[in-house]
Image 1 (cartoon, rainbow, N blue to C red):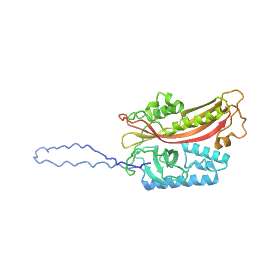
Image 2: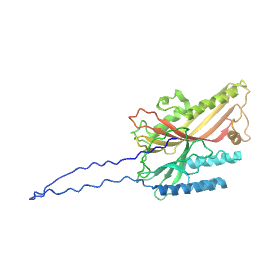
Image 3: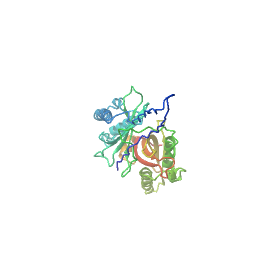
Image 4: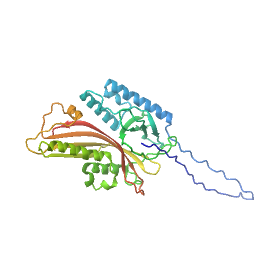
Length: 335
């Protein structure tokens, strides 16, 4: 991942006026107003303190396996997904399902908005057990609330992140219905859900650059179907995505676009369509969640997801592009 930043420049238009006092020929000097100074409403040292406190809670819960202790420092999709990961880890008997949320950061994107809620973003250095860094979003609901981890995604291998203002200047939030972009942040998530569900058959498919998540489902679906067809059971695979009711988070990029993060849910269905054929859960995690459920000809796996994407400004020729995602199984059934 290439890290780049761009310094934002504040431009102030001033109107110079001259005037003569009645009865005086001397021109009076006109004071020039001082240019406002753009600045983030959270300093880098304050952000570091926030990160340390959140990391402390995450680490304590990981050791104690007490998900209730997450609430003081996690909220929204992050709380939901971490609780799910802890449940899956307990069912498996190991910590492999837990995303490494070590908060050693290589870049922070701080808020410049005076109002609440406020959101900041940060990109970790590459954790030892992951192939890519993690992009995190933090939220402060009101002036009296603590900053909490709101969501995260694992960045795609080799992704080039958009540029942002320098951290000390801050970056403004983008409203979910902002129309300065190719599509609003809310519509970008809805349209991407369509592209994930029906791939190239979606009417929005051409608006998005092809990405690793859609390719994953193509490859994974083919793998499952081929395995079922070896038993001459006429395999079928489908996936369905939809956004959750959680708010969409978006922050302005240096080029006038936006980095958008949102929560989604998904379901994959694997079916053996030939009568008399039975299939079970295909992975170690889904087997752990399956328990002693009876085997049938259908396996349905429900997931909790986070996605982050770059949405270009309206006049750009660029496509909307995924920069990262998290895809966490939450339950398995026999249909």
